[in-house]
Length: 337
Image (cartoon, rainbow, N blue to C red; front, side, top):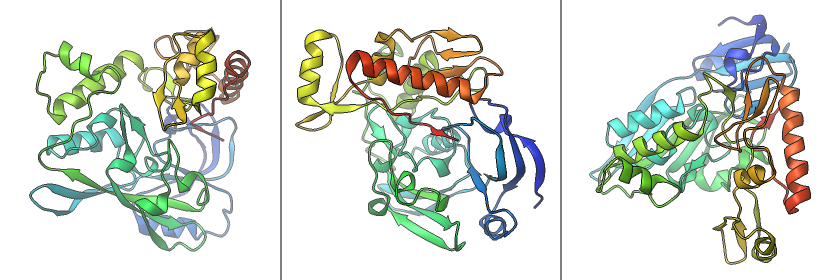
């Protein structure tokens, strides 16, 4: 266990922003993590997982702790279900593929989402009609203050759309070290009606899809719309889809007859932020070294050596413009540091 100094964080964030950490350490076990957290001479600490849901705008004056704890194990199983514990440092997509290869169903719609397992519960990751909370059982987390381990149940986590207790009351207080899931072993419940999954399966000439087929369809859709962070710096969807009242939506639809929506409740609807941003004229717009992706307006991109502040200012411009045109506030999904 060795603390390094003046380390570039460019390889550790999917936006590829080149900022420096005064001090940096990668931990591969919970014991190592406890030891690092107990260090008194590093009061300012930043926890870094897969680096997929953050925008770094400045150098970090403190200690960056990279969570690199690995391991996947079956906790229990019966004829129908299996309980699996995955360590926080496991790559999320690789974990999904491991489950699919073992014919464990429930998270196939979450294929190709960037990031690690440990950060997945923080924003309750979701895609194509499925959210992490649907298969979540519990997670273990270490208190930054006391270095003790606490188990959070699904109820404890207060999951909501792209939200959890780890973005609210427990924000900055715990580090997730493992996540436990309940997945199906047979009679998998497939979710294929959301988005373009059905049409993609038709293109693949699949009439009776398996969880493997659904995963392949999701991967094909995502690859057609979203840039690979290894090629173009990005953090996936930068903004949340706003939820507005049905009455406000009815007013909007009079001026914008093609505005799409998804029902949330009797009185609320979700409006795709990507549609709003595209209608506001930002899709595919480039500002030198950064811009908005040509295939998905939700994705802000770093074409090379852009500053985090450049992308942050672009996001604020988009928010301001969408508010002016539609009177809808869109909120950033990524963490801005």
